[in-house]
Length: 213
Image (tube, rainbow, N blue to C red; front, top):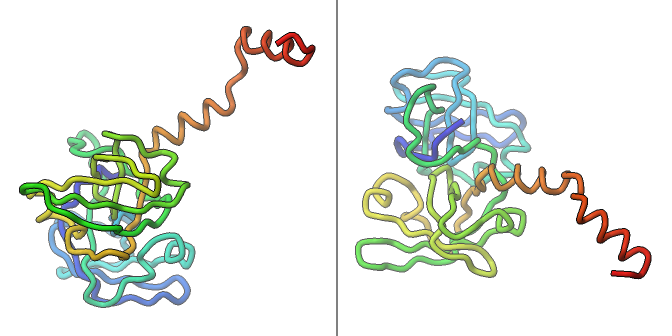
């Protein structure tokens, strides 16, 4: 589990998209207490540390992960958002992020509003259905607040501190971004879809079936 608060921006040192391929990231902060088998979110994708040294770590990425995220489009030298999993008892500065990408969106445009940067993101329907104004969305693993909804996606506003700590401001229109919706919306949808009908709903259904509704 992650909080969506990016700890540092790492750099891709090596990537191989064939088979269970190694992805090597150069970084520093997330190595402070790292152990083999730890989880680190890379652009919002939960990966397991398979090896590490004083300069970075290596994770083995499955083909399905490359297909369902923007990791397969990375190249050597690419910058990526990094976050260690949340420690028990630690503060949650953003929201609960699982590191399981729901879909890949694209940067649709950027504009300035005072010191803030407004980023518009086009998102697939399977993500849009869970997005609400003032709700949370993880974009490349960064916990952001939805500023506005659009027919094809949503917009977020980045304050100066956020601009300096994540990769999103450096992207261009058309660049892919990993999206993870707030898991609470998915659970609510699932529970509502499976709940038993109330007595009133059963009565109304019976009336309608008999032509009395």
